[in-house]
Length: 191
Length: 191
DNA sequence: AATTTCATGTAACCAGTTACATGATTCA
DNA sequence: TGAATCATGTAACTGGTTACATGAAATT
Image (cartoon, rainbow over all chains, first blue to last red; front, side, top):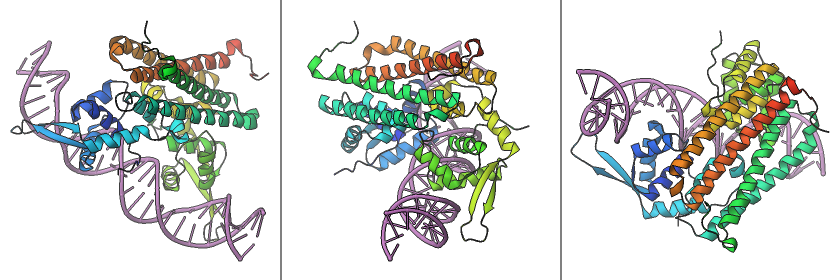
């Protein structure tokens, strides 16, 4: 049995990309530095050691091509164990801490769910997202009621920003649920 | 002359809080763990070393009360140099990287600006925020035009989330500019 | 011929996490 | 008197940053 300990964002991102198709370290770094998917760390000092760690844990396997050359190219592919761990991570329940501090992780997980989980699991994720976001939003509203009077103009506006963020997240989750849930199963979103 | 090197989020948060009134390490940790201002790290292993570092840099000064007891209470207050550095940080131009990856820093800076900067500087911050957000939003829209066709449903929804976030940020900045700018200087926002 | 891009990595450093350790004070 | 909270800190570990180093292949 594989424990569902949380893995770092970088590890998760690497696992997600490699789960689709094999990548070299360089390809991963490119993906992180050029696509919006990752404003993750593309620094070599992060990626190379991370790949070593993940391989040592048995989640990916590196194959070296052109073994003769000085710097042979190394492609990493996911293992069966890696696939299980990745799915376990995607299925992890959404927590308050996630929606407050780890939105990037949540979106990464969500973006890669389609091929790896079934519809009910995706819906469960979104409903957890909705629930936790709503809970935090309630807390913020309550807090504003309690301390709102003695906030300066800027503080008040910053508070507004928080409220607007979580409201937007909540709306997004509801829209996503409506689009994914089979009751109103329209497949194509673009006209 | 004080260099405007970027300081860590935790350092910035500590400096902001202490700039208002002296805090002990414990009070700082409480503020970080209980208020929404900081979902920053309240762990002792972060806060105590950070205070040492900041004090060593001459930005804050600790005063020990109850010197007789075994664990004397230590209150930190900001120095003139610390105040200069803090203001320098608040005045730093808003970058693309900030709006994409460091929204928490930006909101922290904004929330503490009122007492420390003048209105024009606050407006300059907001206009930088607006400009960079708009720029990134344009980039995202363009990107969707280029690659949008072959996104899966979840990927597409995740992309939507990004777009909605930056749109919300942009609207927030515009609203904040309108409220702060003197041309339409209405002071009280709450009825 | 020179520059850019592909491609691999290391080393020193920095800051944050978890877990541990200690003890005083306040309140039920 | 026992629990919670106030209050200070350390140690081992983790993982990410910047800067450095090397060299092949492709492009201009």
